[in-house]
Amino acid sequence: MPPKQHPNPAPLDRIFLHFFDLHFLDDLITAGTPRARLITECTLATRLALLCAETVFIPAAAFFESDVCRKVVSDFADLFDSGRLVLIGGADSPREFAEGKIPQYDDSSAQAAAYRALLTATIDAPPFRPRQRSATHDVAEAWVDIAKSPNYLDALFGPSFTKEKSIIDRRWQTVPDGLGDRAFTPEYVQPLLLDEAPLMLRRRVAGHINRSYFASYSTELRAGYVTDLVFLGHDIALDDRFGNLPFKALRDHLLRAALLTRVLDATPADLVLLRDDPEVAMSIIEVLGARPVGLPVQPQLDQLEPELDAQVARLRKIPNGARAATRYHRQVAELVSQIFAAQLGPAIIEHPINDGRKRLDVIWPNQATREVFAWLGSRYNARNVVGECKNYSSDPKNPEIDQLLARFSPVRGEFGLLLCRTVKNRERTTNRSRDAFIQGRGLAIVLDDDDVATMATLSRDGGWDATSATGWLFNERIKPLV
Image 1: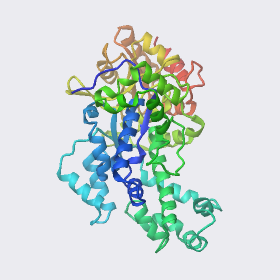
Image 2 (image 1 turned 45 degrees about the vertical axis):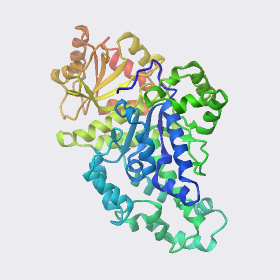
Image 3 (image 1 turned 180 degrees about the horizontal axis):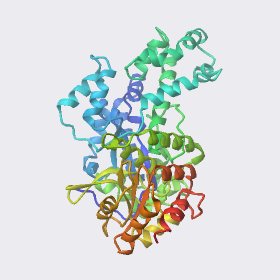
Image 4 (image 1 turned 180 degrees about the vertical axis):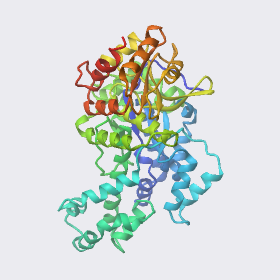
């Protein structure tokens, strides 16, 4: 049954459920935390995330490797088709994900068995979204970077383990090469550092790996975490660049307001509607702060500029042509999502339309409440931003612009971006878009790699000023048409 629609967007944009990680859960169970309590807290934390966030991301590795994760997430199967729960992993599909994971684990491991089973069985799961970067690469990079600090071992392990630290210091830099093709996980890393390691030292190593692993997802997705957990709590520092959800504070507030039972008892379809209830909405606002419901969290862009630069560099390295079309499609869609994170919802890739007979390359929900994108929404019916991606070496012509215009509709929206590699004759391209606009067919904006790179450099919180990304888009690409 499709989920019911609600009029108000979520107070948070995206949440990444880091606590489902298999190694993280296994460490807690080994430390004596009852499994039943972990499942109970995972379930409520997931419910609160769905209540407060537009999209909830789950690491695909956790879903396929952890029976705790599958048990909890499967209870929300009614929401799978809505796109509110999304698996995220470094492959194009679950099958390809499994094929890439099997060689990373020992044949006798539970992980390898789980991925082999995935190749032969059908698992009811949330929609799968490919990552644009590798968690293993990010973890390895963080592993090497931390060793550049002269006191990194003291920062990681404290004043103890003097004897062990001298051995670890000699071996630390050899770990990435020593792992080979195996997963960068605590059970494979620890033996490369020490033959026998005290429990506390093993936990500190695992904590450093987990911190880098979680940050890899959070940074790419621009997603916050569920923090302030009780049984799932840990001493890993999780940043709040993208808006975190404090579990215990919200749970206790809902309990005092006699609202927690409604959150626990609501069906998955009704759960996301509860944020439209004035009492529930007020509780969320009081806990999350004065951020109005519906406004996306504005990231600290000074911290994100290096990431945007790296995304642009990756975009430019993608070759033109059909063979690299999928890579270009995903890379440019993610980059646009990050540039306009304060105005647009996360990119929905290959969005089905016409009962699944056709697909949109990409669509971004327009969540802006002010300035350029809000003006586009009210003036030019841009309730969504529709995207078409063309990995061509030549300028887009009328058929490409017509294809984008054909995706418009009064319900879906009548504003879109044609993303391409290069525009040599800007005047001719602008005239083609202007002709369509004058004929009442919608507003189609053509952006090439240079345009995207410019907006990435200017990226900040909106405005009509040409020194901001949205201002540049308006002044340089929209204004000449309208």
